[in-house]
Image (tube, rainbow, N blue to C red):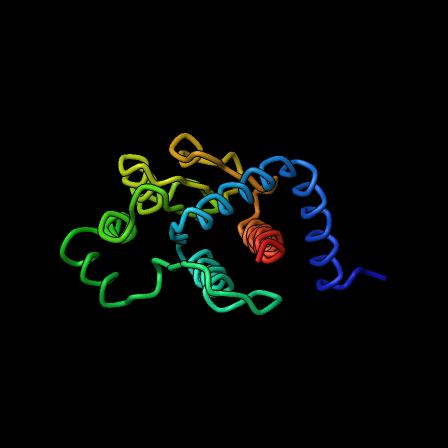
Length: 188
């Protein structure tokens, strides 16, 4: 009897999560501290990504602004993926590569934190956002996979999920972000 697809999917996800838990333990703790110091200093958390990673960016920004598992004061968080007028104007008038960096430049300030979701680590608009953030003194964390891509050289902290699968990486990115939310909710 063959194994059902859903069972295979869940087993593979569990194995990937276990590898990530071991490989990224110190990195996740470092990320918690970056988030914590940004929030305590009154900074803003910015999130970006493309496709499914854009959805993750929106999801996580909402967890901070509204609530995660318990009621608390809102935490300053913005997904740079949500303003369609801004995104399409920038893409049309400048370049799709600038859709996040333009917002970082206009909204960000030293003391903020830019969190970049990019499974390849090579998305030009994410790379450009990291470059602008660095220039402006904005801390950066990237969640990626595979070999980390070019983004790993441009950010302060890069959490590379040990998988070559985009779907697995996105599933683990969301779990990591929820673990960070849990740690920060405990502070509130």
